[in-house]
Image 1: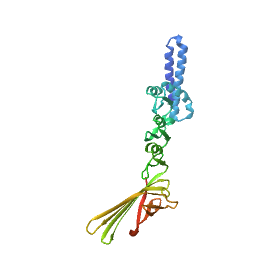
Image 2: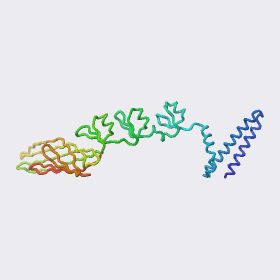
Image 3: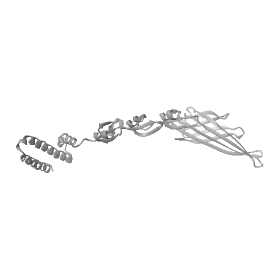
Image 4: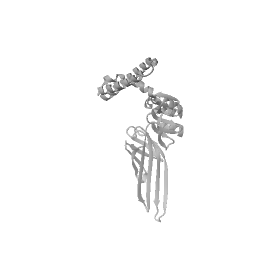
Amino acid sequence: MIFNYIYSLTVLKLVIINDCFLMKKKSFPLKKIAVGVIGLFLVAGGVHAFGNASGRKEWQIFNGPIDWVDDLKGERPGCCLPQCGESDQIVCMESGGREWIKGSCENVEQCKLGCCQYDCKVSEQMAHDTCNKLAGEWNLGKCEVGCCRVDVAVIETMPYKTCSDCTGGSWKKGQIYTSFMEMKDSGVFGDNKANWEMNMSLKACGDDPVTANWTGAWDWVWVVQFPDGTYKADPAGGMTDFTPDSSGKASFSIGKMPAQATVSKSKMHVVYPMGSLGDIILDGPIIKE
């Protein structure tokens, strides 16, 4: 196959040389140089093509001249800032570009995608340079989220800058956990029938639910049905918080009464003594948000 390449190139070179001899003699030295350069690159091009086709490295010595010829054909695309789009330098500057950098945008630091927090907004995939233009705070990779406590009962998952600048809350690194517990029962007291229900909704932030600080609300509804068919409801409710020890045990108050909590990786167990009703026992799963 190499002989076919060399033969074709030789014939083409001879045609060009023959045309040059037909030109005026006074331009002969310049034409001779031109023919030599053209012939060199035609041969180089053929050898380069053969080297690529055959995979033989010894034929790659002409890569430098061939690359140079490619450069003469037209400027190779680069990265246009701040758009982070690939284009020729002239196109970049005529399109409002601020800076043009050779190579792919993938290798340009200003174009790497990351987390941008700006104007109470969050973007998971924004170029560094674009984020700077928005006066945002940028970091490589995904946005680091944590627990933003707005008040005693409200905890949301969000990045720290959004929490501090946009909600006025306090931010803590960690995972949010929730637990909802419910207990219903009834009984007869004398001639009266009573129904009661207790609910507790808790949230915590931390790396481990067993030792995290739990806060939330509880509510109690006591409904008494009298023999004449009338009802009387006695609702109550309030806030509570507790932090278990290393074993997951905690003591806290529900209203004015003491209660005990046992926390595991996946379950919440609360015992609340209720006088003549005995212990109110609440159980619920712990869910990671």
